[in-house]
Image (cartoon, rainbow, N blue to C red; front, side, top):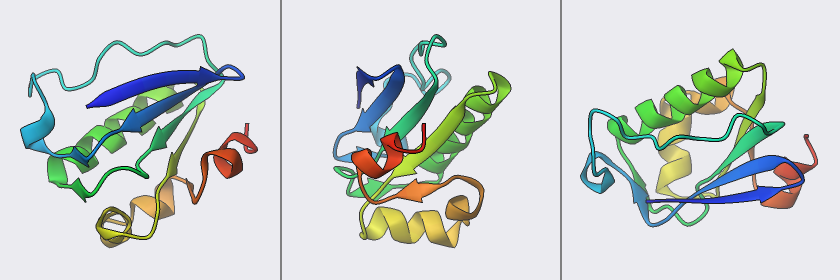
Length: 108
């Protein structure tokens, strides 16, 4: 479900296909151990085609975790159903959303 890439001390968390309750192996602990020795993280949802309320909760957990480390957390998403859900849930009002990885990396 997640792929991790580090670019210029920024963690890029790539989500393939979807971020739903059906994609998680362990519902009680859906997030793997994430590195803390980064300047922040980018959640790349450009390949995601679906997100549900469980996926939104993962996004909020990631934001809270990086905020507790005083690190930046942003999202990259394209105009599709995922972005529509992010807007409905007003996630785009609390987490900056960018259209490309390059645009997001420029924020760090």
